Image (cartoon, rainbow, N blue to C red; front, side, top):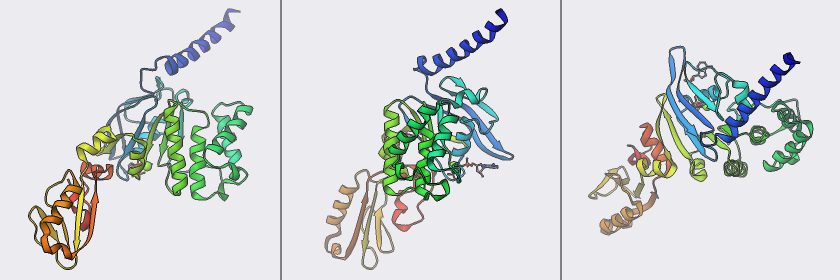
Length: 337
Ligand SMILES: Nc1ncnc2c1ncn2[C@@H]1O[C@H](COP(=O)(O)OP(=O)(O)OP(=O)(O)O)[C@@H](O)[C@H]1O
Ligand SMILES: [Mg+2]
């Protein structure tokens, strides 16, 4: 009957549109955010955010507490409206069609979203079903992701019986259950122990290698160095700096050298004394060579040396230079921009 075929055709068109958007237009980034602005009342949090995450790419979104990282992620996932701008997830207009876009993304939000009275297994299984997996696939994936995140032995424990780090891992497990094209991880390693953290990073890397686009926020900048992530620094409501980890460290990173003495630091040309410490007056590119030269130049004063700290430029020093934050500690004062 003609009346019955129209909805069917429409359905087929919608499904085809999603498939084409998601799989064939693979030159497009999986996530494209353009000109997104957002204010909470008078508080203008986002002032025009543009960023893209391609398939297989890990983008580390960093910024101070309150910079707007979670706000941006909430907008991408349809949990929060924005004032202006557009968001495309797998080619789908995520602001107009948040439910359709949600099929392609996995989210581990900053606030834990685990049901405390359900077991870890039930949390995973129910979430998989909500994400559209049939019961058999949901059971299989529950076991797979539990294994991946080292939670197999905890599957029978209730949410409120898990430790903080185990909850974090369960959270990440829930985000990857349905093999999303876009993975949004908002501080996934907070409270995770060294092993759990390494496990989460390993999975993020593996997901990216398989083609998942990952947006990752963290305050542990060494994680982004380990992931060799693209870096986007959110500062003042805009993406202030964007580039590969190496580019950002090369452009903005500062090396650090600190010589510590018994008693007041001696005078040394090119070095600034601060109490018992000496630091280079100007930024140095090779901290090891600068330290070696200082040891020679110190002459007999070198016998008063009790400590020597050398640090190569890091993402952390680059971040501090970009955001204009100055180390308050004496030892790191030479890192300021
Ligand atoms: N529901 C809300 N109502 C009003 N203001 C809010 C609300 N949620 C967040 N804000 C404000 O928006 C700004 C950005 O907050 P957001 O949570 O996005 O920061 P963040 O970069 O994720 O910080 P953190 O690193 O601490 O997680 C902050 O000034 C915060 O106070
Ligand atoms: Mg946040």
